[in-house]
Length: 173
Ligand code: ADP
Image 1 (tube, helix red, strand yellow):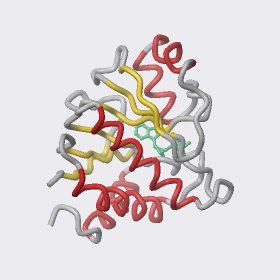
Image 2 (cartoon, rainbow, N blue to C red):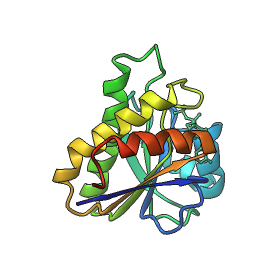
Image 3 (cartoon, protein in one colour):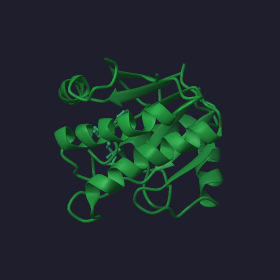
Image 4 (tube, helix red, strand yellow):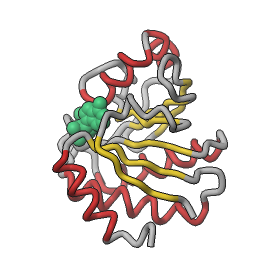
C-alpha cells in the first residue's frame, strides 16, 4: 500500500522525491506562492517548456521535466478557484487523481503535493484536506509504482489541519 506522509516545508526543497506538484495557473507561468517557488528554483527552462503545455483547465494535470529542481519531474495542476470553478470539490479531487495517474504512467515512486487551491484560489484548508485524502484513498488501491505521497504544508496551522484530516481518512492504518 502507498505511504502518505506530511511535512511542513517548501515544495521546492524536496530533493528525495521523483516529482513535485505545482499549484499552477492556467498559462503555467511563474507566479506567486507555489508556482513562484517552483519556477524560481527550476530556472527559466521550466517556463519555456511549459509554453507548449499551456493552457490547462481546472482539474487537469500535465508533466514537465524538473530542470534545475532536484526532482526529475514537475506535475502542474490547475486547482479550482473556490466559489468560482464548480463543482470545486470534484475539480480539486481531479487534480490529485490526474497528477497521480501521470506519476504512474511515468513509473515514478514518489510525489510531493502542496495544498493545491488553498492560497490565492481561496479553498478552505480543512475542506481541501478532506478532498485531497479522499481522492488519494480512492486511487491508492490502483497504484503500482507510486509508493510514497508527501503533502508539503507551508504553515504550521495548515500542517495541523492536514494531520487531523489524515488521521480521519483511513489512510496509513
Ligand atoms: P493556489 O493558487 O492553487 O491557491 P498558492 O500557490 O497560492 O496556490 O497556494 C497553495 C498553498 O501552498 C497555500 O496553502 C500556500 O500557503 C502554500 N505555499 C505557498 N508557497 C509554498 C511553498 N514554497 N511550498 C509549499 N507550499 C507553499
